[in-house]
Length: 347
Ligand SMILES: Cc1ncc(C[n+]2csc(CCOP(=O)(O)OP(=O)(O)O)c2C)c(N)n1
Ligand code: SF4
Ligand SMILES: [Mg+2]
Image (cartoon, rainbow, N blue to C red; front, side, top):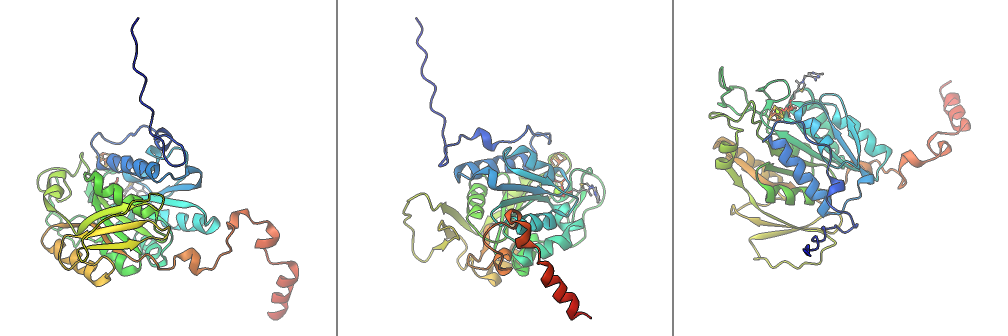
């Protein structure tokens, strides 16, 4: 009689779940699209951090990138909003329920064009949300027109090269007050996973710009957001190692060359400097590196800036601990007598 070997036990995370429940629907994006790789890393990060999806809200705007939340975390809440308007929907959701873990996915068009005003105010408020830009330098969903992150000199498949100044979303986010700003590449599994896991331990806006090539409209020779170009011009500012609060690992590191940063939930980030003078808690240094690398046609990647102790928007507003959405009416509405008093005062 043939004896079959027992199936290897499936890996479970710290809340006892397998990877499968963290997946979403089958992707309808093009095969090879960078956005699919980012969805995979989000699934890995939430699984490895043992996040309870019932606490999670996925948000997005409009674009191929904004379709992505359908392809990860099938057990989370979701809101696919209007083009460029995800920040206000996310802010509202987080004010109504401060216990939510929010992850927003946007595109370079959704953020840098129609949604730029909303993006600016989200960053300056330091709303506690992970904000991912799946950055392919074009409007993928509407057939590849240049977006505001297209680099000067980047060439389309046909027609003239881009001559307009690009928006550097990382430099903008740092200047505006975001407290965790990173850039990565959809093809760099290790770096992107560490950044995503660290962003889950941060309290405040975690803005992650992920260069994510559009294989259908912007992956040819001459494009500065193609796989080949980004692989050759990726300049990490440091190596990112992340140790979550629930893993008791002591890390040996070379003093002087590695920076230890304690995050909100007690997790630790170890940022090993590759560039001599890089300090991820120094806004000016981060901004300078972004400008210098851009001038050379390169992309600085890694955790560019982190300010773990900055108050987030919910804390600044001094909201009660219980989610507003769970409070009875008599605790959210002023009593009749208080309204009458106000009206009297206006006479
Ligand atoms: C109000 C409004 N204006 C314009 C559009 C058309 N539109 C849909 S997606 C898109 C741009 C998407 O680009 P991006 O955010 O970079 O996402 P990608 O598809 O590249 O991932 C535009 C202009 C729209 N849907 N709604
Ligand atoms: S058109 Fe481009 S951005 Fe959209 S799914 Fe295809 S490869 Fe991705
Ligand atoms: Mg795009």
